[in-house]
Image (tube, rainbow, N blue to C red):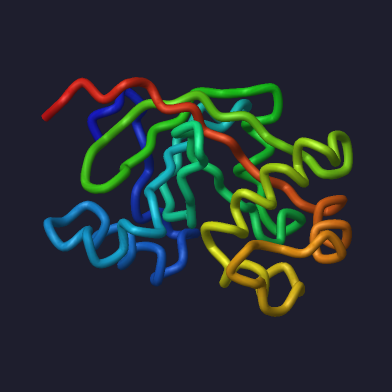
Length: 165
């Protein structure tokens, strides 16, 4: 990644499936997965090390990216973005820089519910990962949002303008 953020790729702790997906997203064949996945590079606050991994993301109406953190209790990367942080994003075969911050349903349920609604309208399959079952084409119903929003962790990424090839 040429984003000015050094990253550890293929670390021993990164599952093999993530390595394969990351290789595809960096290749010319990225179109197979780029519709719903991006490579995200996050730098640890304490360690200063950067790690790159694939995440599911959707573009919000204002052009920002939304990432839903499934099973946030099992993951630590998103905690480095509490209060905001610089990230690298490989989106549709291009390296971009962005500023990301966490939307936590426990501390800000209204913003988290709004972002979760936008995410689920664009990626209805994510409803199953949240235990919500099937999401209608019109988006999640109020009962589904009320059930999921208080525990939802999302990351909103504002991308810097693309400077071209």
